[in-house]
Amino acid sequence: MLFVTICILAAGIGMGLGVVGPGIGMGHAIKGALDGTSRNPGVYGKLLTTMMIGLAMIESLAIYVLVICLIILYANPYKEVALELAKTIAK
Image 1 (cartoon, rainbow, N blue to C red):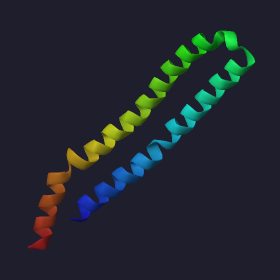
Image 2: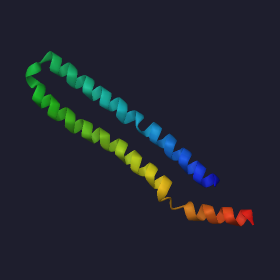
Image 3: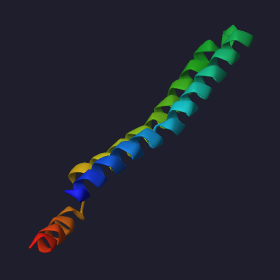
Image 4: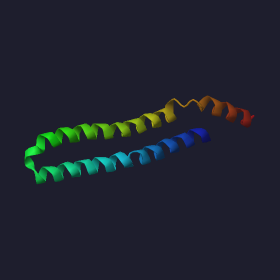
């Protein structure tokens, strides 16, 4: 049971820390696009396209973190080993 608890904590902490970077990156990207648009409104379309592509790439990092956390929770390769060890110790 301790193993499952540790996995849940690791996934939660990993997800929390893993989305901080992409969140900050998205904020900087939007800030830069808004600054560029305010200085030169004529390049709005070009900036919007570039910003959307950049945001999609940044968001993919957060999705990778989510996938790793889901693997830790549901498809952990060490789950069976830990449960067998717990059964052995409990006897």
